[in-house]
Image 1 (cartoon, rainbow, N blue to C red):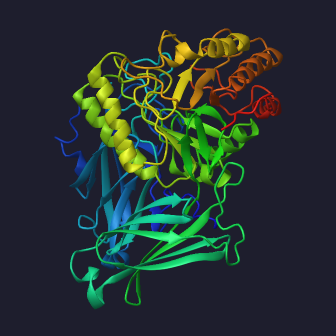
Image 2: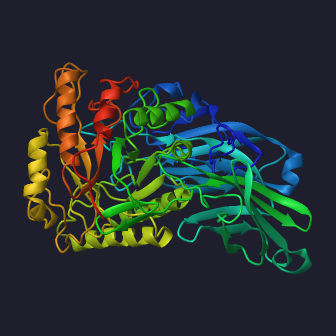
Length: 600
């Protein structure tokens, strides 16, 4: 796989002409929400300085105030090159800004976006001029439980496992020059059984002769593996949406293995270059990559590339001490993945957060499985349904192409759907989200509702923080039928199924357990009793991890968690990413084989 442009925010859709707008911006709080009325979008004074993309709540922003300020403003000047603007569109991209974001260019409203975890873009071509241009951004993030919040608190003080809020811009802001006639989007679906890649193109162009006759456009794709050309296609652009299947099978030529597959053990990736032509004129060029892998369910097994997959996952909330939800830099993401591998895990459940896309890129490159999870709302209402559904559909669509993502988790522990056990309206909502997710991605498993009270779900996942391995094992073997029937509560007085739903032979994963904390740590909490030192920790960790492996019908687990997070101090590393116990000993326990083999 080729080396991709360092820091490029969307590494699966790379162009050459772009400008990173992170760095120092002018900043002002608007606690009385009067900025729009007073015309702050034309520029404002009484400014502070903030370092984007870090939120004002964080030390790395240069401000570090944790109080709730629901309305904030940013402004800065950007320079636009007139020569490029002549035949290009100027696109302003936001990878993440929480929650309602409004953007003005030179005093004119460009647009707005709702949702703190999905990315968005604005075409600012018509409102910008050659040379200096003023960008003003207002972010509104009221502490409302109907918004998809993830682990952000919605009250004054942090509590339980909810932490300091994240307000406004928290991911990269950047500008890109995009050709007037261009490739707008690409959806890539690996079809491993048929040894081909299905590509769905979206072309951005005016209607008319560009789609037919001598003046029409052609779209090319060149696929290579480790520098060797594998396939080349040319497709006439007859409409703005086109689907093409590209044959990758070279088993009869010089590629004896036929298809190079992606897996945690061998994360092999193909490079692909998209080329949009009109006659001999190259209009647009976009570089990307993909992995050939198949994830499917067969009976009570999860199969990766046709082979049973035992998932050794760890819960990853993606928080840092001085920057909270925003990674301090790309190297921090790489180091997290490397340290998770060093602990013997083959995947992460990215909990209540849509991580920086560079994280997903490095998981693709390094072979780390990922469960993509939705940030939860915490009150059920029509408004919450609307907010959640729109943002979740964007998240699934925007991250679809990453081979590392093997499971979608739209709901966790009945958060935002507190009466799902008995309330048919809330059950309908989860069924609807399941089917909407499948309408975009019919291949990946979808879990509804992780840990508790499942409705329609491809995998049954159970949360259990039992401390004793023997008790753990006995519970899930002796009472297996009762748990799967929803008659025996497995955790916190919760059943595995909502009323009206039942076990239908799906795979079973223990998707939260552990959470062990040490004596004498800073004020905070873990699950169950604390342990006195490494020896006691490893004994308990071994006991419960091995117990799960010895439950015959369970095909994976997810330990809580990678690092401490603010008041929650039950990570295998502290918030500074220092190991609390010897990672080699954790790795040995995770990778140790137990005395039976699950058979198909």
